Image (cartoon, rainbow, N blue to C red):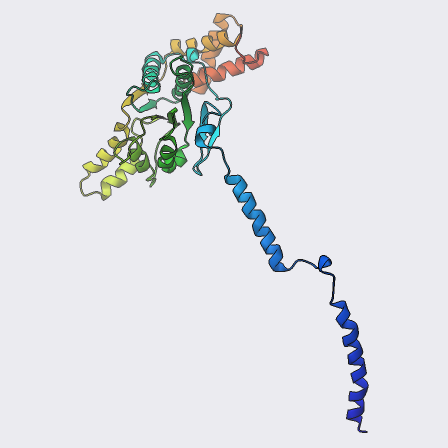
Length: 324
């Protein structure tokens, strides 16, 4: 026998033995089998689908709007309830009597189903523009004829482009809504103001009858000067830039101007806060410290008066809760 054939004959039994021993090792009971990759993927997809269906099972808009008196709008379509609104009582807002009365009257008409105007509160910083909006909402909402049917919804400046989506959500509701944007202005190449223009006036659908818009701004005209200059330089008729500037503010039927307060008005604000919160100090000492505080801040305003009250109350160990 040749060497080649002898090697083949010697190797054959070994290979046969290996095949015989290896074959049983591949057989496992079905119960102990490891899931295949396809099975694992299928189970993962089922878990994701179940999670998505659970997250989309949200309460209806009507039910969610009953949850609170105020909400914050998110551009993904959510209205987040605000359990406790950061507001100042209407009686503590000094030096804004005329604007207060006008805004309260406008808000009351709207909440009772009568015609009312969108409002732009513009002017000096810290003079209570946003505080007045929140206080007016609370005051009118507590009236017996309104009975909590007036909701306040805050939309952030950067989310203005989603305003049409919010209008669609609110249009069919039985509630009335103040949509409020604080510190509204537009800079640079921002074109989102066109969404606001369409909602205020001029769009096909227009503003829903149960929605009114209140905005605050330090500017009377909401577009920045550089935006107007850019439009003036690129337009065929330079006057169109001025028209564009005015047209946005014109869509607010009610303009309320807030100006810097006098020294007496500033001191009235401070005294009103101290009386309300039970901060007891001699009047002459209070006036001296309040004026010194305003001098160091370089301005007099409702915000400065409140900041001084916090400083004084903290030094005297008084908590800022309403005194009885």
